[in-house]
Picture 1 (cartoon, helix red, strand yellow):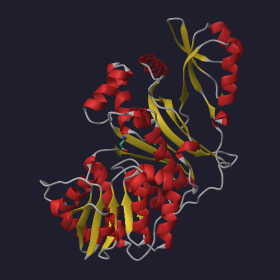
Picture 2 (picture 1 turned 180 degrees about the vertical axis):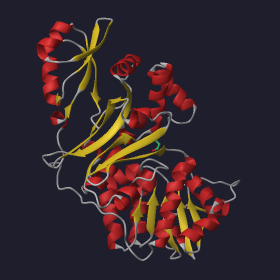
Picture 3 (picture 1 turned 135 degrees about the vertical axis):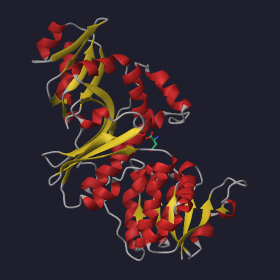
Picture 4 (picture 1 turned 90 degrees about the vertical axis):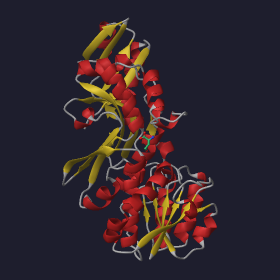
Length: 404
Ligand code: HSE
């Protein structure tokens, strides 16, 4: 019998426990080993829970119990989770986590500790909730050289943008609705300012290109400045505004990673991904493109990925099959955002003549309230900014055009 400990009995932790017991017989068959949950770590009491007898408050109970071979970390945050996960791995206990902040900040180190201790550190639930993406990239697509990964990685902002697109709802109203429905937290910063998507693209990028990318080295913009006018202009241009996390290997060998709202043309499947759904497109030399789509958040969609990791950890017990990526020496493998080549949607308070003097061959989209909007030719961001300063007028909005 292999015993499991679940760290954190919040939304994902309780989903993991409930899903495990709901499907226990088939989970045990798939794992090929007898499994049971022995402990649930939480500082709170849950006297009415059917699992109240499993609650413990001291991590040492778990660390010192040799029967516990598998751990599911569903606490979130780095402060406590990092120490707990590190100690579990050092004791040879495999860990599955749903904690994207932990993987984005400490992934390289924890993966290496897992290798050293002949156990595993899995994190399928950290990106895309229910969507299989980590294991497909690590295993099913392993024969490929990955050239790019891009997609909608945050459900809350996609819900907000969908309301703005479909109902012309202003950002503040759509955010309040997302909070009312329980998608956005009372402090929505991590979602709306792109930090959550940034952590996820860091994980995918590290996995795709083998070097750890830290969130603070990634250019990150959120959606709080997007207006209904931007959305209407995107529609006239032939697409939608979506918050995209992307990472790609450039011809010079450097990696360009960013999170920002983008115009996505209607021909791209990502443009039609709405509501709280996520979608991730992976480009590889053998597959061309593969797209992964599904529910990116929520109790059972996320628990589905955690429990699948538990099954795989049980099957792999005694071996270390986790992926490993390197700690980068410095950031010289990352391309600077100013060298990013893009077409850019610009809304600016000036006239057509002033724009045409600086940009040749622009497509104008709309003219309203003294603001003209257009899409620039494909240039580096530095060149675009220089040209906009030459015009010398107030730039009201600038949104990149997605090029995959
Ligand atoms: N806040 C995240 C989202 C939850 O909205 O996608 C899942 O990581």
